[in-house]
Image (cartoon, rainbow, N blue to C red; front, side):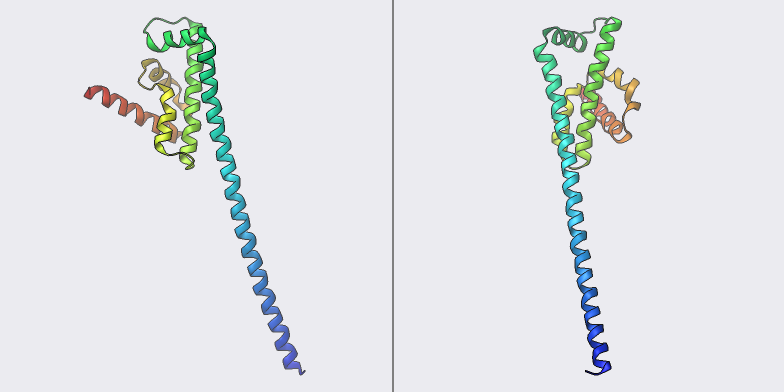
Length: 165
């Protein structure tokens, strides 16, 4: 073999090595992307599970504790004046409901649930209730702007429906 042939052979081997390394980098990039997608899906599933746990907790409180159920009925469905303690309890209940909605909205933004499922999840908020609206007016700054905008849009829709009825 001449020097030129050896040089050409080594250049060919080097070229093959470069191609092999590029193929390897491509495969690793694809694997990393797949892993990131799976990790994101796992986080979304976990957040959705938290949403379901919140729903179960709210249901458990109302179903298993007759006193809580009676209080919530009184607080949401009458205009009767509430004591300071009752106002506090109602405020915590409403806050939990809005937090539940915030988790559902997060899932909607990530594409884990569609808007019909989101609206279904938000039914627990009882947005037409004046006490809920008052709470929201005072506390909406505790939530992220996209969620606030969405809830405000739903409340505006609710008000428009009432005016048309």
